[in-house]
Length: 588
Ligand code: ADP
Ligand code: MG
Figure 1 (cartoon, protein in one colour):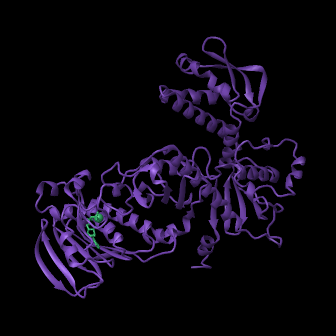
Figure 2 (cartoon, rainbow, N blue to C red):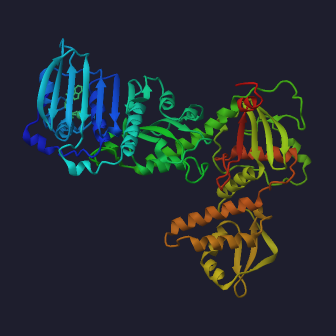
Figure 3 (cartoon, rainbow, N blue to C red):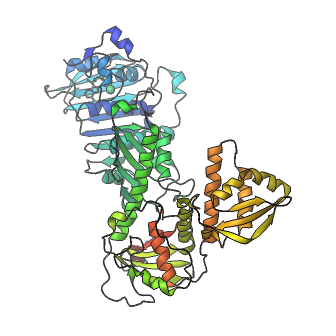
């Protein structure tokens, strides 16, 4: 016999009263028990979101008869015998409490057979008391069926939500188990229909494909492993062309335990650097391995919440890893390139080096010399991170087809047609230049200061914040009544309509809470940079020479977030060859 009853004083040490609130709490405990029992096949069947019945069948160890009879008693467990062991526990659940709690509020049937027995045992329980016992023919493993939840606690039954809500909780839980146990065959049947059938898989991408919408697989990007020694990250995230309307596609696991932590998803979304529009979310499965000493999973009785000793480090690691993975994926995407050896049929411009990868040993900027005035200063020493430095040796080629509608740059790419929005792309380049050169802007002193007159209210609003402009290379001085003189502007912004910019900043200040100094500063700064970039960038409708385009694409490649402009619009877009071929019915 392997199950022991904990001595009363030990039992007391264990924070008692795990409260069963909803069907998903039960499903969680039962699946954990099945996993603890070494099951490789777990079938879950629910009726009415689990309100009517829950049944779980596994092929785990099963129980010998005596264990089966005692497992429903409070504080009976085969998994530890003293409180100290709680600390080092690696299996799930509150020790020895789950089955007892569940049984006390439902009608339960247990059928089980241990490998050492020739026949199985079927027990029927009512509110925790065995009412029937029978020897049955049964395969090795266990089936537990829970019916009539809260039949004896009507007050609690009233609090159950609709079957749809309970189903959603169960479906999310089911996915979490599938995502963290790849070697187990899970299935979930609801109201007679098999909703998920997930045989074992060898990687997380395959698991995600089994569980999420069908289009997701082609959108998945493996998470780049982190350098951080304390936190190991792995998993997969969706690329920038995928979005859903809620956070239900986000799953986090800490030391293989599913956790819900709003800050972790915020950190993840931050890694997308505004590529996704507000209100749109990626899907992602992220697994963190952390030294158990640096994490407290017990703060929540159901162990869904998690508290880190150094939450900031964890969050930054997630953000960085997501950012790098997206970057790498785009580069990889673009790297699956074959060098075009034959001259294409249509060549308005000659071939040039890959715009999205680092300059080749023999770059084509010699051609720039022909240009009397570059439309913006090329970057000499980019002050920001160049994510692709390590890939400099890669040989890649693209072909610029040309400029379309004086707005879009069309690139031939082995995977399809790459379309770049010239304004959005240039905006992004400039924005990052502004960020990189912050407080280090090269400025031009204006020979004749530019005078701006504001109304009284705007002047008063702006006056305390003139420093903000100086930080961006714009020197403003109070001049006459309600007047400002612009005495210097940044080199990069010489074409900007500063009066308009100032008006916009005033409007932003008015709508921003000034009590949170740091937040205020950040918001205004971001806004200012975005506005400056927008105003200084080439516009849709500007005709661009090949050289200008080449330079733009090169600079875009160096930006840390080249997928979107600072306002969140995409900078580029791939129309893949397959979609084109489908349009022409060359492929089905
Ligand atoms: P705990 O899991 O914390 O030990 P439970 O109340 O969940 O407490 O389960 C009590 C005991 O019943 C377990 O320790 C285990 O020995 C046994 N048990 C429960 N479910 C199963 C199962 N599916 N297969 C084999 N044994 C099980
Ligand atoms: Mg348990």
